[in-house]
Image 1: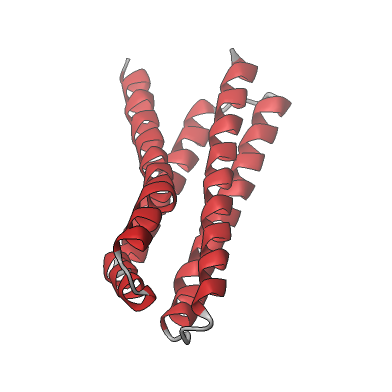
Image 2 (image 1 turned 120 degrees about the vertical axis):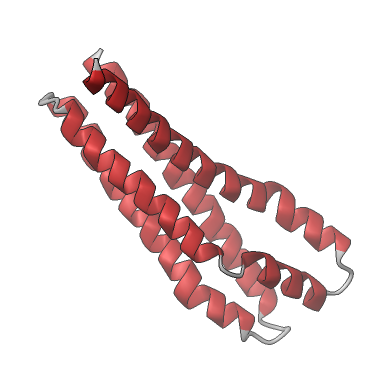
Length: 156
């Protein structure tokens, strides 16, 4: 009974943390950036607003990613399935998650500082780069969700 309760709580935390990351990225790409771009007449105002909104977010996202990774690892050991299909899904999910976190780190510590220091002429290229990064991150997280569903189906 305690095992099932613990597994359920860890699963809920894992799913909620991953859903929060997905939701924040989707909202930023589909709502926040387009609406802010339409609201601010000057590109410099838009950049100042986005910079203000993003300040300090990288640490919150990395904390969320550590919650996802930590609960995922514990759930992996709790589950303990030896099915090759389940293990393949979990390995794929781990690789995709590592790629997503690495892409986020690149965007946060390399691309973002370059964007902040970019000239007005360079900004449109950074908008395209960040849109591509956002779409890639969303796709990677969706693929992780799909692998989880597939893994659950494989063990049922």
